[in-house]
Length: 177
Image (cartoon, rainbow, N blue to C red; front, side):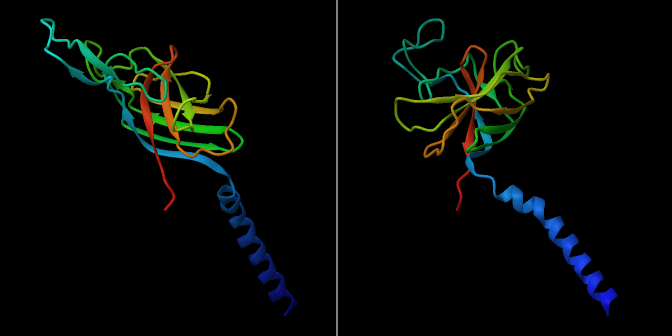
């Protein structure tokens, strides 16, 4: 009888200890999460009669929350990101590559960083990471802490930017249902 009780207690302890890591992971306070991304198209529209060189006299630049776009269209295959209340950020991006010009399908020799912006209207506060290089396939990993971690993020935008500060891709926010 004593052996059965001891065996049952040991089995219960193993089950409880095995469940501890998943429970701890769910306790993390996530401020913003992103699943998927959109590559930049630098101009949102052109107006007026086309110039002889194929350009338009009135072009609206695709500025997102005060951040200018990178030159030329870029595409991104996938992105996953989370930012927690302590400012810890993890970003996994795949296939951030030029989508036009002579360098089409290359990483353009770029390095990138992530910026989280939580305000829907100006003034915007940027919460950014350190810069990491794109690999030859346009893949990158960021494990960092954003500057000035936000306690909450009502209108999250995550921009992937180059070292000069232009944005190349934007994360698609996930919304709890």
